[in-house]
Length: 121
Image (cartoon, rainbow, N blue to C red; front, side, top):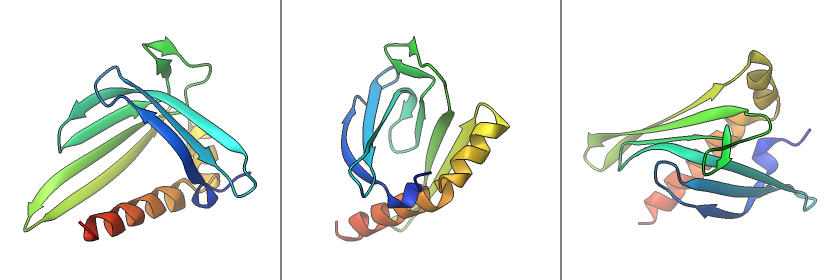
Protein backbone atom coordinates (compact mmCIF):
# COMPACT_ATOMS: atom_id res chain seq x y z
CA UNK A 1 0.00 0.00 0.00
CA UNK A 2 1.30 3.46 -0.93
CA UNK A 3 1.53 5.94 1.96
CA UNK A 4 -0.02 9.33 1.17
CA UNK A 5 2.90 11.27 2.67
CA UNK A 6 5.30 9.61 0.20
CA UNK A 7 3.33 10.88 -2.80
CA UNK A 8 4.12 13.92 -4.89
CA UNK A 9 1.89 15.81 -7.28
CA UNK A 10 2.61 15.01 -10.90
CA UNK A 11 0.25 17.63 -12.26
CA UNK A 12 -3.27 18.91 -12.07
CA UNK A 13 -6.09 20.36 -14.11
CA UNK A 14 -8.54 22.35 -12.01
CA UNK A 15 -11.75 24.05 -13.12
CA UNK A 16 -12.56 25.62 -9.76
CA UNK A 17 -16.30 26.36 -9.91
CA UNK A 18 -19.39 24.39 -8.89
CA UNK A 19 -19.65 21.53 -11.41
CA UNK A 20 -16.09 22.09 -12.62
CA UNK A 21 -13.80 19.09 -12.93
CA UNK A 22 -10.61 18.36 -11.05
CA UNK A 23 -7.81 16.00 -12.05
CA UNK A 24 -4.85 15.67 -9.69
CA UNK A 25 -2.19 13.12 -10.60
CA UNK A 26 -0.18 11.89 -7.64
CA UNK A 27 3.02 9.87 -8.07
CA UNK A 28 5.03 7.68 -5.74
CA UNK A 29 8.83 7.52 -5.45
CA UNK A 30 8.90 4.69 -8.04
CA UNK A 31 7.14 6.84 -10.65
CA UNK A 32 3.76 5.10 -10.48
CA UNK A 33 0.94 7.56 -11.15
CA UNK A 34 -2.41 7.75 -9.39
CA UNK A 35 -4.93 10.02 -11.14
CA UNK A 36 -7.66 11.39 -8.89
CA UNK A 37 -10.68 12.70 -10.79
CA UNK A 38 -13.52 14.62 -9.28
CA UNK A 39 -15.92 17.53 -9.38
CA UNK A 40 -16.27 20.67 -7.30
CA UNK A 41 -19.65 20.81 -5.59
CA UNK A 42 -19.41 24.18 -3.85
CA UNK A 43 -17.03 27.11 -4.01
CA UNK A 44 -17.35 30.12 -1.73
CA UNK A 45 -14.42 32.46 -2.38
CA UNK A 46 -12.04 32.68 0.59
CA UNK A 47 -14.37 30.50 2.71
CA UNK A 48 -15.20 27.05 1.41
CA UNK A 49 -14.27 24.39 -1.15
CA UNK A 50 -16.30 21.18 -1.42
CA UNK A 51 -15.20 18.48 -3.86
CA UNK A 52 -15.97 14.83 -4.47
CA UNK A 53 -14.80 11.85 -6.48
CA UNK A 54 -18.41 10.65 -6.79
CA UNK A 55 -18.38 12.22 -10.25
CA UNK A 56 -15.51 12.28 -12.73
CA UNK A 57 -16.57 15.26 -14.85
CA UNK A 58 -19.74 16.95 -16.02
CA UNK A 59 -21.77 14.97 -13.46
CA UNK A 60 -20.67 11.60 -14.89
CA UNK A 61 -20.77 9.15 -11.94
CA UNK A 62 -17.46 7.55 -11.00
CA UNK A 63 -17.04 3.80 -10.84
CA UNK A 64 -16.57 3.80 -7.08
CA UNK A 65 -17.04 6.97 -5.06
CA UNK A 66 -14.60 7.17 -2.18
CA UNK A 67 -15.06 10.47 -0.36
CA UNK A 68 -16.14 14.10 -0.39
CA UNK A 69 -13.69 16.72 0.85
CA UNK A 70 -14.61 19.95 2.59
CA UNK A 71 -12.07 22.74 3.09
CA UNK A 72 -13.15 25.60 5.36
CA UNK A 73 -11.24 28.87 5.70
CA UNK A 74 -12.04 31.29 8.52
CA UNK A 75 -10.50 34.76 8.78
CA UNK A 76 -9.13 35.14 12.31
CA UNK A 77 -7.85 38.66 11.75
CA UNK A 78 -4.26 39.93 11.91
CA UNK A 79 -3.38 38.00 8.73
CA UNK A 80 -4.31 34.65 10.26
CA UNK A 81 -6.66 32.05 8.81
CA UNK A 82 -8.11 28.94 10.39
CA UNK A 83 -7.90 26.01 7.96
CA UNK A 84 -10.21 23.04 8.53
CA UNK A 85 -10.20 19.98 6.27
CA UNK A 86 -12.86 17.28 6.48
CA UNK A 87 -13.09 13.99 4.62
CA UNK A 88 -16.55 12.47 4.41
CA UNK A 89 -16.38 8.85 3.32
CA UNK A 90 -19.15 6.81 1.75
CA UNK A 91 -18.47 3.75 3.88
CA UNK A 92 -16.60 2.97 7.09
CA UNK A 93 -14.36 0.64 5.08
CA UNK A 94 -13.38 3.54 2.81
CA UNK A 95 -12.49 5.69 5.82
CA UNK A 96 -10.34 2.90 7.28
CA UNK A 97 -8.58 2.37 3.94
CA UNK A 98 -7.91 6.11 3.64
CA UNK A 99 -6.45 6.20 7.16
CA UNK A 100 -4.22 3.19 6.38
CA UNK A 101 -2.96 5.02 3.29
CA UNK A 102 -1.73 7.79 5.60
CA UNK A 103 -4.54 10.27 4.97
CA UNK A 104 -3.94 12.31 8.14
CA UNK A 105 -0.18 12.40 7.60
CA UNK A 106 -0.56 13.26 3.90
CA UNK A 107 -3.08 16.06 4.40
CA UNK A 108 -0.99 17.34 7.30
CA UNK A 109 2.02 17.48 5.00
CA UNK A 110 -0.04 19.39 2.42
CA UNK A 111 -1.15 21.88 5.10
CA UNK A 112 2.49 22.36 6.18
CA UNK A 113 3.50 22.98 2.55
CA UNK A 114 0.70 25.55 2.20
CA UNK A 115 1.90 27.33 5.36
CA UNK A 116 5.47 27.39 4.02
CA UNK A 117 4.29 28.87 0.73
CA UNK A 118 2.18 31.53 2.45
CA UNK A 119 5.08 32.50 4.70
CA UNK A 120 7.05 33.45 1.57
CA UNK A 121 4.32 35.75 0.25
